[in-house]
Image (tube, rainbow, N blue to C red):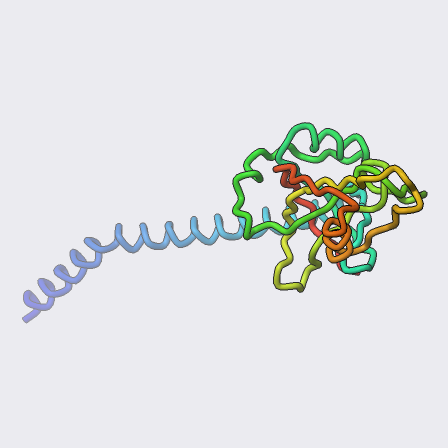
Length: 196
């Protein structure tokens, strides 16, 4: 009987010893996974803290009109090098040249109108005339941070016929009246609106 008991214990020991490497492998793998996960969490938390404590970055905000009200924008990217450089020089903030913006679908963009001539005041637009006009703000169904730039030129040099246009409705009405010309530029700029 003792012999049968010894044989049974021997078989259990062999079986346990047989699965021992598997158990060790599972334990080691679990410890490595926990260690890697902890390091990743620490890395992510460290990155977040670094971002919070890094030096302040100042991003210039441009103003424009949407539906008669002042709106604020941050220009980050433009589909042509010329516009990226122009905005960078004007704002002192590096605007990225991103040619693939021109490949975005028309439905992913809103319209932006930059006046080339006419009224210029203390807070003029990017080309020395009045502030630009956009079609939508965040929350509007047709809002997009991507703008098709349209250039608007008054057809007269008579300043008494020129006024500040604060909405796309006013721009289109003036176009219908033959007062100005709108030219599509095929330039797309990424300029998210900021809601106060």
